[in-house]
Length: 428
Ligand code: UD1
Image (cartoon, rainbow, N blue to C red; front, side, top):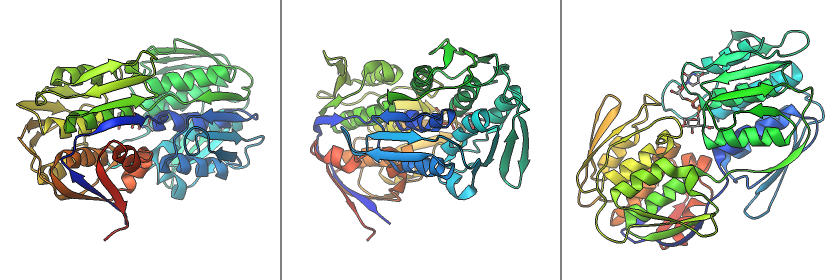
């Protein structure tokens, strides 16, 4: 199995091109099932999760054509004149939890979906009960059989309804939104997630002919239409990749220009970073950010993860690596997932001083992290270990890097172009 070797202690300086967002790309790809015409996505990152979704879609009869554009495989054309299969088998779904996003579109267009209950990152139990309740609110009949969700629409298809989410769910909102576009009549989604990836999906659906009001708010109103048409749509920049490289600048004390991304996508994170002593300046072009920490040590600040526009859970592990090097203590509270501190023991192996109490971690900053052999446990945890290793003088070895492949396009290349000593090697 591949490993990443980092010889840390070098300041990073340079430019990094931010890729399209994985978490926007996945639901946008699933949206191709809603129309018999081609959907073309540009700025789609080349990642293992995107390839997994392409595999799932191909199994339903989607013709997926990916070609090079600005970046590797950055354009993807998907076309499914007729859905030939409505079962998403365990073997495909287990690789990636987001496969459950095919449920809404399959039901809406084909009237039937059989989707294996998902696997995915081991960051808590992560049920899909709210996805199922949303489909039921649109008239679907749902049963659970032998590890599969079996869902069927009544005769005539889905019917608009009122979906009230008891708490914010990103994937649940996406499934509900996609299904509602083709339901008969009006659907209201209350307590909808407001993440930029939801806005991206809504805008793409509108470009495909959907009728959606309230985009960017917690209440989405959808007037169902008889059919959607094809479109071309550019995926929003990845705010988590943006944030991860912003932390790379902060933790190594350098200056990175992050291109192809926007401040509005990372405002809560930017506020925290500024409080820590990091400078963030928006480019005049509105399409880049310059992040630097040239003077002084990072200051410890308290952080709590929350749904957007709050601090993202997907940046919690990276901020913890940064806080591990801060002057002073910080308390990091995880309010979205119950088991998202798996990076803590690994960061402690690198000399961090972190104590977990329930859903909070007390991080007491240390003068220096030390290099170590560590193991990635999930996608964001693995990048937090890379960040810690960049700051630790000497050689760190990170194993199980396949987690990184799920969410970070060309990570070693992007970092080494800015002066990091980082390489990927086949297991040794
Ligand atoms: C998405 C993101 C993930 C991010 C998360 C929260 C994608 C592909 N993944 O995941 O990177 O960390 O949002 O911002 O976009 N829940 C239920 N029942 C459900 C659905 C969710 O109890 O039916 C719970 C989850 O266990 C979790 C919370 O709701 O505790 C939020 O999960 P959700 O927003 O649905 O996350 P995902 O869409 O899976």
